[in-house]
Every structure is written in C-alpha cells, then in structure tokens.
Image (cartoon, rainbow, N blue to C red; front, side, top):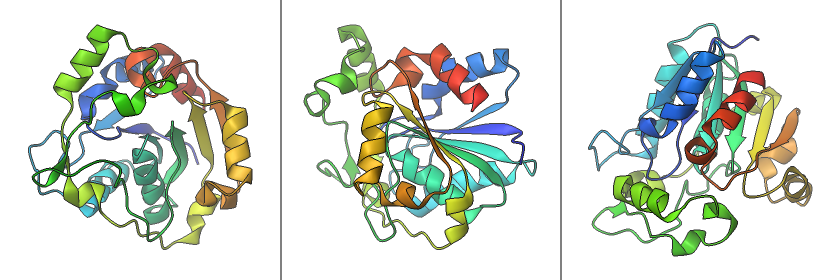
Length: 227
C-alpha cells in the first residue's frame, strides 16, 4: 500500500504544534503531514479519554482513503498501534519514535502523579540523562511552560487491541535516546511483546534526545519521508 499522508501523534503534554518544524520539512520533501491535536492535549477538554484520542486518530486516518503512515511519539506509540489495530487496511506503516506500544489490557500512560484529574508535566528530573541531553535551559523552560496536563481519562485509560492483522502492518522504530541495537535486544528479550509478534520491524537511529521533533526536525523529517 502506498501512503498519501503522514499522521503525526505527539506524546504526553504535547499538542499538534510540536510537529511544526517536522511538518514544514516534510512539505519541502513533497510529503503531506497531518499533525493531530489530541483531545485533552490542546483543545481544553480536561475530561477527554483514551477512547476520544483513538477516535481523533482514526478520523485522520479515515479522511485519507489512499492510506496513511501513522507516527507515534513516546507513549503515543501505543496510539499509533491502536490505529493499526483498528484500521489494518488503511494504515500502510507505523512509525514509533522513542517508545513501544503497550499490550492489550494495560494502562496507556499511568506514569506520574494525577492532580485534580490531570497528569501535569513532572519537571525535568525524571528525564535527566539521555532523554533531555540535547535540550538547553531555554528549550527546557519553553517546553515546560507549554506543557499541557494530560487528562486522567487518557493517562489511565486501558488499551484494547482486538485485530491480529495489526501484526501484518510494517513497523519502523526510530531510536533517539536509545540505540537500534538496544531496541532490538529489548524486543528479543520480550520487553516489547507487541513488536516481538510484528512481522516486519525495521530500526533506525537518530542522534537526539527523547524529543527529536523539537531538536532535530530536519533529520526526523528525512527519516519519515523515506520510511
């Protein structure tokens, strides 16, 4: 299947504007990008659920009958995989940036403290090291100021995967703060069971921290345009 569009899904605390640089760079390469502002992450809906986010992603996929590459960043790797599960005939390829999809029955992103019904950005301490190594102090302040608290109904939503045809959809894992060799080892050791069952998995390194759409938009766009 050829893909007519590239659907871009940001991880926690990000809205569609996180992809502005990548979208511009993809346009220069003749590719049509569709950044999705997920419910609860930029539309002011603090009561949004994981199901609402899946619905928004599928709406973007369904809008292009010619097929889509669906790109998930960080925890949104699971959202991209949910799209492949729900639309195995429309998703031409899944690209996972800096993460792996969780399995059926697992919580989507229950990682940090929930306060007043949302999961705020927890500050930079949990991301010390390779994750944020290429973000200077100004970039960190800008990121933190723009970070959108994620609704509890999203973070603690339960993932449901039902169609084994998802394993036929080709996958590309883009490896930022970890290497392709490390990712391959984790998959082999069973730490990414969904990918262990996928029939076509390629791994690509990118020299960046956890947010290459912010720090390496041109390099990331080149990868996305050629996968």
